[in-house]
Image 1 (cartoon, rainbow, N blue to C red):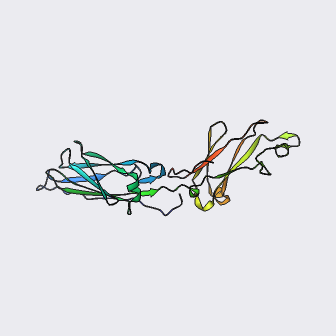
Image 2: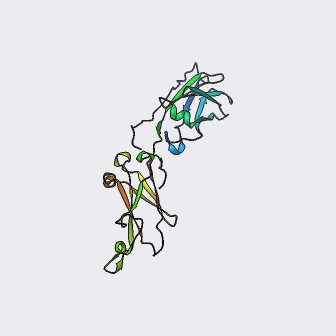
Image 3: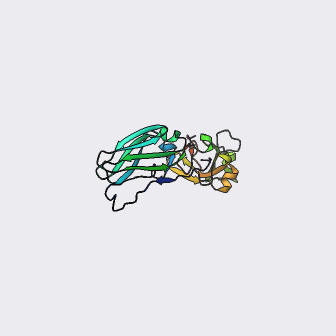
Length: 231
């Protein structure tokens, strides 16, 4: 979606093992949030599992604390050092600095800390509004395709054009318009620079048989997967 660019980064402490502290150090790392460090609209629901690994000196059952949106959520470390802690997506989205701080004190070891920054993009393109659909061939825009619009010199057009319109400033090149056709099949048109400037994309479909309807819906979807309602 159109928004300020957020950059996801990670930071973690590391330990230096010496002959004096060998086998007594604890280390902690976090896995990228939602796989790609980007929370999109479809992921902004329920809980998101925050995962990571504890290495060095620790015991199964040690507690990892996650600091998110002024809350602390805890979980236990498995025997192999992994952990998975469910955090409400709403807390991750609302967190002011979009950063998770994880801490642990390993049994028989030391304290360890890791930070994971992530990005949030939950805004659907076109201001969250479905693209407006029109049948270009329907020249008088009355919702009917009549003979004068379909027949030229006795020859009936084999296809008709359908456009999906949007506000150019609210979409990006690379966003997609996904059409659902009368038979339920999907056709995807990617917005290029020309389509963005024009504020629409156009799809060509077969001319319906006489007395039959054209039933088409369309949604806009951005690169993060945020999708408008259909129309």
